[in-house]
Image 1 (tube, helix red, strand yellow):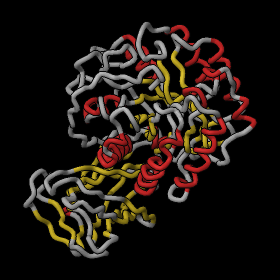
Image 2: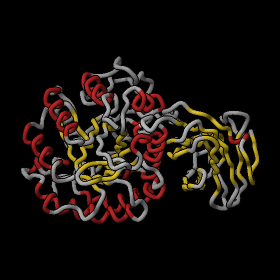
Image 3: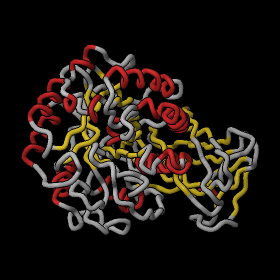
Image 4: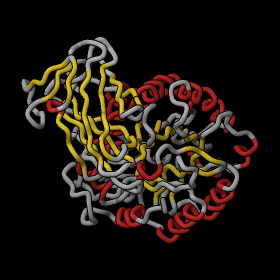
Length: 463
């Protein structure tokens, strides 16, 4: 969120059920009908599907094995529905034919509280086996079912592109093709978490056809520092929701005030260590490690990045990392500087990009030209923009906004719009009172900025 958005109206937090529906047509396999080793089918906890669930024995090596019949070879999303009434993670090794990935199954709060977690994989034509094996003496969670979503490579953004990486000055998919992602940023999770529920995220993935969700977790302003466990768990949950829908997820460390990212370095180490440890098997993440540094030099920001990036890389060597730039991620323009300070003194890491934020009614030709020049020299990602003023409010300048959108399409600069909520300001796409009940699909509850940006997200890149 831009620098003028420091005081937000407090909104009642309505915690909605966030059980994701797969983005593709899917086949469901009930765990109690699968092959069970060191476990038992039970039905003593409410909320399961089918006739029951599998209660794993509390031993390493207990497993449930599913046999899948897949019509054609290709990408698939596996979604496990489970409950874990303990406070301890119960990780499992998920073996798909000959490929194994470790997947976390953290506590859900109660044995009758069911959640979903997903991973992407590739299935063979014909028979496939999926075995979920407990890796600790605590055994596995209670496993309800496996849902398998399949389709062509273009079925979802993640199925089409897989693991992203930075190649040269562009963002590329796992085939090395330069791509552009388009999507939406959440508002602060402390204020508008109720706008991120099953229906709204289904609409974002299905009706809006978004490629990416930016998960904006404020650090101050009643955010992360007030309850690290609560906000980290909200981020975990939203990562899983984006994954289940085949979208990419930007984990936004939304530092803003104070503007020196080093103020939150210790917190960032703790947070990103947990995120990278839990989600390093996913191929749909990007880490944004400093939202809008301000009031500090580029060398100060660079020093922060050089300390934090190795913390992430020891657990996750592949996920692209997005680094905020000087003066509210304006490449220094708002402080009278330019992109040259980064070009001449880049962060000492690979597979990284630099961020740029703009608000079209406030930021004109100088900002536009800076982004254009920079994109030819360093990898750029616009992780936040609005069609209105820098306060996230006021009138929309759609003409200037379109100039930016055209430039970003021409140079394959991925972008995320601010913001997917029903805040009173003009930059929030929904009219007040839309959350949590919607409707979120279509245009009936959209403000003018929402209608405009939805239309441009729905016109996808050619991947």
